[in-house]
Length: 60
View 1 (tube, rainbow, N blue to C red):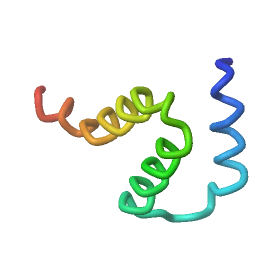
View 2 (view 1 turned 90 degrees about the horizontal axis):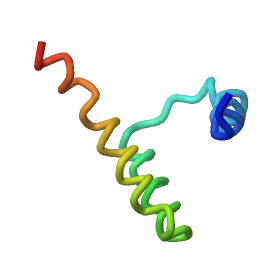
View 3 (view 1 turned 180 degrees about the vertical axis):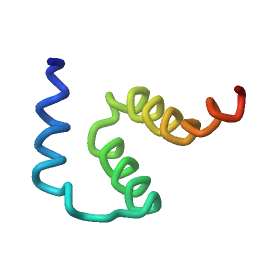
């Protein structure tokens, strides 16, 4: 188990029943980076990965 799995499991257990929009998620990611600028690159990579998930299916 990766260390980050704990945070993911906490997120799922606390907010797993909620529905959120990508607009809300993008706003929270911007807010997080504003408060934690050292995490700008990992957040950017996560956002890019999420944005391009369907692109892999298009290449087949």
